[in-house]
Amino acid sequence: MKKLSFIRLPIFLMIVVFLIATSAYASNPVPQNNYVSSLTSLNILRGNYSLESKVKRAEFISWVVRAMGYDQDIDISKMQMSCKDVKKTYWAYDNLKIALNFKFIDVYPNNTLRPDENITSKDALVILIRALGYGSDILKSSYEEISKESTSLGLINDVTISDSKSLTHGQAYILIYNFLTSNLNA
Image 1 (cartoon, rainbow, N blue to C red):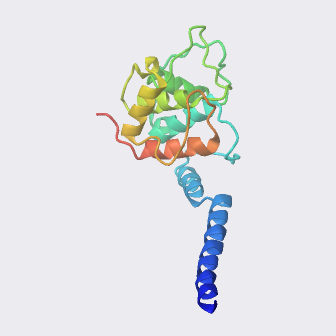
Image 2 (spheres, rainbow, N blue to C red):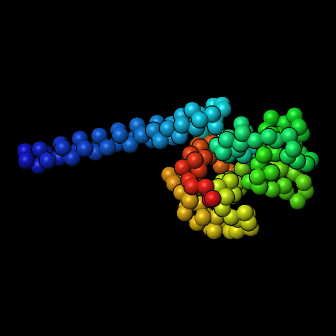
Image 3 (cartoon, helix red, strand yellow):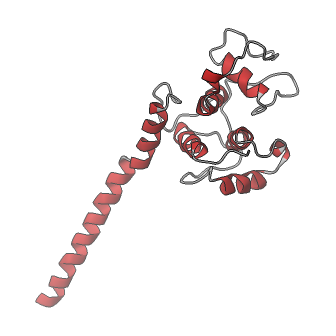
């Protein structure tokens, strides 16, 4: 009887330690904090957002433009942008203009960009693939094809996303981080 309880105690302690460790990790995920601090130190992220809040299209596009360094190195004075829902005074006007001119994004058929709408996972992946120089016509592809291309480029490592769902800040941070470690198409 004593031998049996001697064996149960270490097993019980291992289970308790495992539960405490997984609980601590779930409440404070270290990788997420690393993504945020890395992107903030690179001046890509500017602000403090809840990881679960939804990302607006203009936010995401601005992060991609900053990640490419285009917000600092490009003369935008000769670039054109004509969208009926983005005024020159809009906070992300310059970044949207850059993204349009570099063909990261397209204007919708009704001549809008919808910068204040939540960005979907599919749209975010298309922007990243185009910014890397792959698949200029990727927008016409199915989500499965976009996901396959994103996987091959390493864009969706360590993140779970699905078709047409709005992207959270936490998911977007991981995508942008992965984007920075992907290879540009020459």
